[in-house]
Image (cartoon, rainbow, N blue to C red):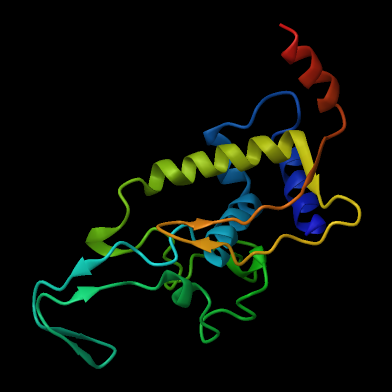
Length: 187
């Protein structure tokens, strides 16, 4: 929604400004942007079902017996859309990652990169890249639906990763960035 984009852009304007690009060191000062990224990872996980694992010993999960050698799949989609843990789970709401004092919180059931000894080894790199990519885009440009176009279908195409379906978007430079982009492009 546009009000979320505008709130992120206001945070970027206040904390970074427009005279320099966003850097990794800015991340601590951009809590709402971090919440937007987390909510994106929650509502549409990159991998809706994590890589299969095999139980190395007899165990149980939620009272169900799991025998050694059983293939175990973690349904990230189900975890991130469980109404017992997420209020209105199909609604994009970055504020769910802020506490009553506006501080960032990470619920125990938010696991976009898995958990425990099998957590994704690329998590810190992926988080840094997501931060720099989203921050850089929203610092410089705005996105909106073209007039008369329906909102994107968010179901996606399920494979190893969740692939977005085709959609239309209008992109425009933010005030002051249009001239900079033209100048930078002519060097």
